[in-house]
Length: 454
Ligand code: ADP
Ligand code: ASP
Ligand code: MG
Image (cartoon, rainbow, N blue to C red; front, side, top):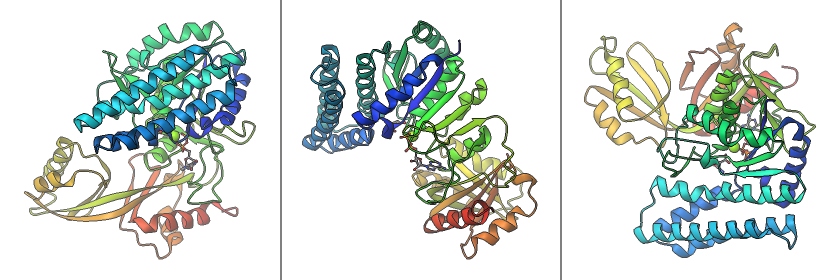
């Protein structure tokens, strides 16, 4: 029988009450052989990053205080869930992780060096704690449960901070170390976000990476469905913090979901859909507090909504570079030479728009511009526009909708659009605006295209 992956995000496991709700959802899924993938409790990962930053600045007291807060919240949840009877093994595991974290932070403070490798070891503590707490709770509830250390299965390369998974190896390890428990009717609880290299060194998949873990494990196990349980009723037509009227989307294609995630819809990690697409496994996004409520199903097929736009997203700050060739832009090899520099310096380009005698490109605001500009200026003049944002208009029906560009510009009214780019997939029309114009732009587009029977 195919197992099912259920991933619960940070807000879903923030405290004991939330974990009780998660246990309810997991119990309802028992007949489906659930593999449960958990994030760290609430904002634990943020606290662990703050602890690392404080330690490297030499403020060991602050670092240890942040760490103590994490363990206090963990023990509170344990006590609340298990009363005075926290299993000795769980208490010992938590104590061992506390000593380990303190040692790591002391080491960082002593050396005044926080490598991505150390930060991954520190950050992994959050998921390693939440899974212990939750597994102990399920066990007390009489559910047959096995706690699995993700580092035994989620094999990655050594790119600490954003490690790349090795899917073929993960498949073999999952068959050996996960499937037998699921087959025996046990619930397996493991960490999202965390992996390990071949020699067992702890890595992470990057912030928000628990969704990616769920997809990787689901693909490796041939799951029937990968469920992302969070604090919204699925993927909404826009970020609800920007557009309060955003509504849940019933069906989304993998391509639309990938574009939305890449252009700022935090609800899914950008890499999540790729393993699911390859394995042909549907991904659903659901609200932990309202398991009977609306949810989104993401599959290969586009939904027949009849609307040109499925959803909106925005991402910023970004920087726009406009390149004017000092020689003829059209000269053969110019674009090749340009992109070679970006590639070699590891700066990724999100959008490109070409004009008669210039090329505009967008890069993340955090990209190291110094060395890049120095090289480019050897053969081109460059204008730099900072504090911009990308507004992404996404929909499978964009390409078949006449005059969509004109309608989008009409809806934007006086918002000034500085650059436009239609993705090669033709399901993403991206606009670059000033950072402060991003929210009003999304709000106007939402009103024009997806509200009041639009
Ligand atoms: P989790 O902790 O469960 O991984 P996240 O905070 O990573 O949850 O993602 C869920 C949040 O993503 C929502 O609370 C919402 O604020 C935000 N979000 C941004 N864009 C969207 C969107 N289009 N649809 C749904 N949620 C979105
Ligand atoms: N806990 C990690 C983070 O906050 C991973 C995740 O929740 O997806 O980034
Ligand atoms: Mg998330």
